[in-house]
Image (cartoon, rainbow, N blue to C red; front, side, top):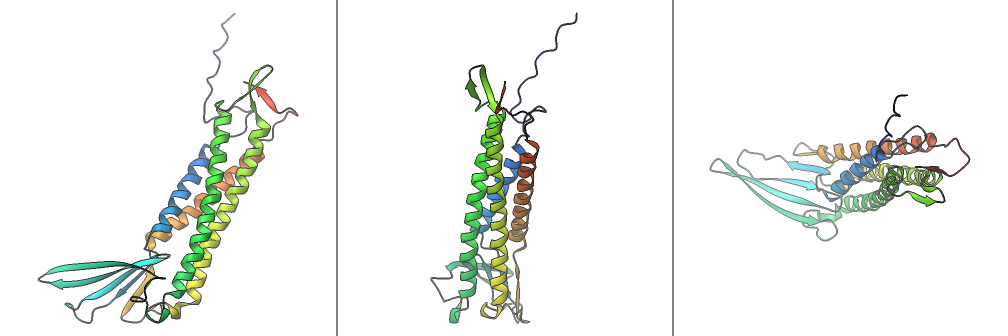
Length: 246
């Protein structure tokens, strides 16, 4: 008779038909979304404001506004060269660039957004830890030992995936709420933001790079939540027991 086929090698990321699906893709999507939102919170390019010089050689100002502060830059042309001088400021500490409390709305919107995004990042980080733990369980790195040798506890994997799905969904909801709240507060207080009404002398628009990053982060969190929930649904083990011998 022909020799029996060699046993299949255990893979850290992919599993056989009896195992719950691996959480590698969920972990990658969740980790990327966390990185994007952390970068967005630290960015000062959420809003860009630029004045228009009346004449070519007249200095003009640009403002890069973030969640809790901004950067004011003076542009001046001399001898065919453009010189720039920048200074950072915080909304709560200075009225030099926001006279008459014009930055109160920006500060309130930014503070609420930072709190909600921080909660979103925390929830997503919990989901990431759970997803990594499940990946290690399915890869036999965190296998348990029973009377018949090491085994994978599928019920524990499924329970962990349920907690991961809850954390992932919560993170996605909080991120959407944070961005929507920031946009709503800014929209409702445009008259209190310097030149938000877009006069002829000033251009005012969102920072496209930051908002592209925010949108990608939300999509990745939603995608990770979908994958985790799908993994929970597919990991219904057909046996009533809690383990499978490796």
